[in-house]
Image (cartoon, rainbow, N blue to C red; front, side, top):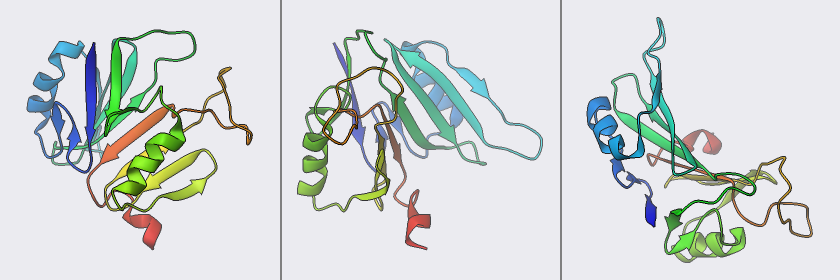
Length: 163
């Protein structure tokens, strides 16, 4: 079993924000070869997209080629993985979303809800979603019981919400 540990606003182990592109690619080497998108003319940003043991990921790089955000996705309905995405001891994709959010709030962090399926923690930055069209267990409001993706980014990633 392997744990991908969320460490907001620093990264997702072994990825740390501010890493140069080559350093980040070496860090995810054990996960397999990602598909690199960009840079393109007029858009210097690039992304690395891949999966590790069924857990999908996208590593986002800024115009200077430094890691700025990492997004992870659950493997999907009926797909097993020995890899856990962990925040404060909770498996983000298996434990109830409310348990994960309780840990966020216990740290003194505020949670904003741009919509019913999306939750963000500005200033940290964490973004959780429960979006899926798959048949999963749902709560009384019709939301999946667990999160289906999580984004970890630098502290100012969600600053636009304060504007």
